[in-house]
Amino acid sequence: MGTLQGQTVVVLGGSSGIGLATARAAQAEGAEVVVTGRDAARLAKAQAALGGTVRTGQFDAAHETPMREFMETLPTIDHIFSTAGALVNDAGLTPPRGQLRPAMGVRFWAALYACKYGAPRMRPGGSLVFMSGTAARRPLAGAAVASASCGAVESFARAMALDLAPLRVNVIAPGYVDTPLFDALLGEQRDAVLAAAGSKLPVGRVGRAEEIADAVLFLMKNAYVNGTTLTVDGGGLLV
Ligand SMILES: NC(=O)c1ccc[n+]([C@@H]2O[C@H](COP(=O)([O-])OP(=O)(O)OC[C@H]3O[C@@H](n4cnc5c(N)ncnc54)[C@H](OP(=O)(O)O)[C@@H]3O)[C@@H](O)[C@H]2O)c1
Image (cartoon, rainbow, N blue to C red; front, side):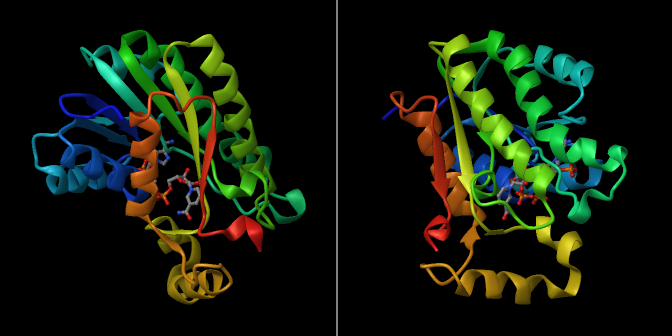
């Protein structure tokens, strides 16, 4: 297995949840981490949690120009993890196109711009990891568009594994994970909903961000893992 010691790991969408846990885990293994997000306050909090001197980038990862400009500030990159994505309740497909577009687009365009502007700066042995979810294979009711965006990045990753070779491109597909994502989405119901979802899983609980981070680091470090989707869902796809 490779090591992250002395390597630069960029986490697009690294100011919270799974991205932040991955930055922490990479840092603990000796990597220099760079985290991004749109919200300045969230980013500052994450920066403080990671040690204050950690480099950050404040921009929307689905937008081309800021992604290009951000990547140009990085002298070298070894691994990129793109977590950015949008979840929209699209039951009945009633939301207007303006709301549906981010649910489909953010995950895909962030991955594409990470490849376009990040890959040329990556050192040999580098890799990209995109965020999908088990929703690609077991769609969530009322989230058809976001589920489709997960499928899109999985196909895109396999294609990029060929186009960017010998860089590697992989996908992480979590099931339910307890993160701040659910604070706004579920409000006061969040703990009860997550507990109910977890009780239906073979492992009896939902996942922790650190457990997904651990799997992302595996994808970065194992130099023979390429073009694959790693599911980390407590067995959720089995039931
Ligand atoms: N939690 C789960 O159960 C679960 C399961 C499967 C897949 N996922 C996926 O995993 C990803 C991360 O989820 P999480 O649970 O860790 O959520 P989270 O705690 O809300 O973290 C999301 C992170 O991504 C950033 N972000 C979101 N949109 C962005 C954009 N357009 N450009 C740049 N940064 C952006 C957020 O910062 P800003 O908002 O400040 O930009 C934040 O740092 C999402 O794509 C989600 O769909 C989550």
